[in-house]
Amino acid sequence: MIVSLRGHLLECHPLYAVVETHGTGYGVHIPLRVSQQLGTPGGEVFLYTRAVYREDSADLYGFLHPGERDFFDQLLRVSGIGPRTALTLLSKVDPDQLRASIAAADTTTLAKAPGIGKKTAERLVLELKDAVAGGTGTGLPPATAEAAAAGTPRGPAGEAVAALITLGYRAAEAQKAVDRALQQNGEGLSTEELVRASLR
Image (cartoon, rainbow, N blue to C red; front, side, top):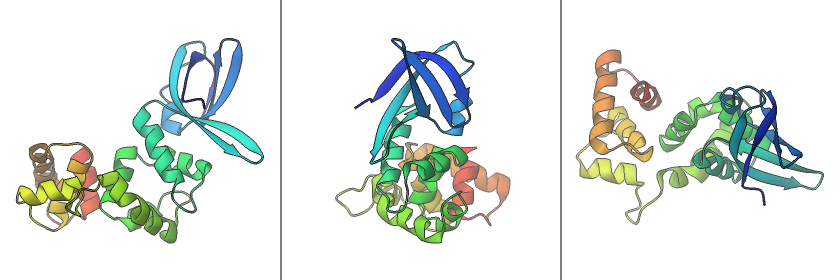
């Protein structure tokens, strides 16, 4: 299985690139944000890749970070999401915001993404929420458990703090970011809106 690719960039298009290594050109499907960061043809590039085999095709998908590739793998495990839909989703929605939406069970925002309807959004939350949060023995995702231990209040603010902790922020950093977002935007934001404002 091809898990990474280093070589010279021969072509770069939205959602597709060709990387030459040892005289062989590899066509790689990539998210839009990756194509915007690869640079101009001729330079050396490195991609973390995932090979997806079907009865009638064998395709490579490339990412700049292993975490993006792993998240792509998680998306493929959701019923109704194929590699092209997963790629489009990662192209249109920032991966951190996507994880935050899943962690916050925000199916309304997820359903607005290209190729994702209400039922698929619900499956995303149902099948990936624990994986995104990394479930613990307490039955709560680490973010929720840590926020609860820290005395974080319930409601959108508490859920936003929990989602940020899930994304890797420390509890104090998450709380500070949410407090700043509340000061700048007022108290009427939903959990997802608070997460997005905090990430900015």
